[in-house]
Amino acid sequence: MSKKKNGRITIAPDLCTGCLRCALACSFFTSPEKTFNLSNSRITVLPGYDLRQFEIAFKDACDQCGICVQYCEFGALNRKKNTDKIIEEKHETGVADE
Ligand code: SF4
Ligand code: SF4
Image (cartoon, rainbow, N blue to C red; front, side):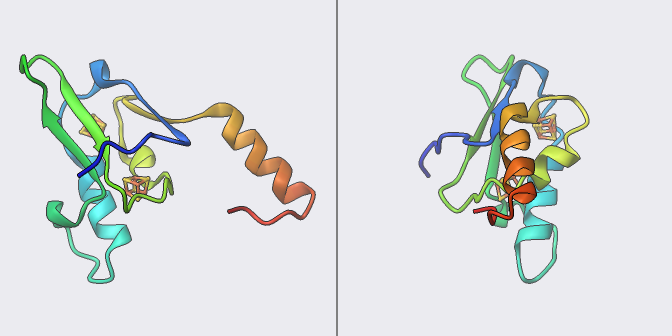
């Protein structure tokens, strides 16, 4: 697995509790089976080398849809604010989002 750059999503590992809600939500909403299965998740949350902080990474298959952000209750995942604005502006001008 490569550590994909986080594109539209910012990561704050110091706020991550390791709850895995993000990964479970990703596995459910992005798989055709609609099941909770961490092996299908496109985000990984693993203990860091010193076990005091989690390491969050996106797999190559991640399309930066942002669903995982909605399910993180601890502020460890966030959408970039300026990206939201750009997306809104695209809609206003009729330019299709990517
Ligand atoms: S942005 Fe979407 S595809 Fe990527 S890890 Fe989050 S929920 Fe999964
Ligand atoms: S990023 Fe958020 S939802 Fe995912 S494990 Fe960390 S605290 Fe939980």
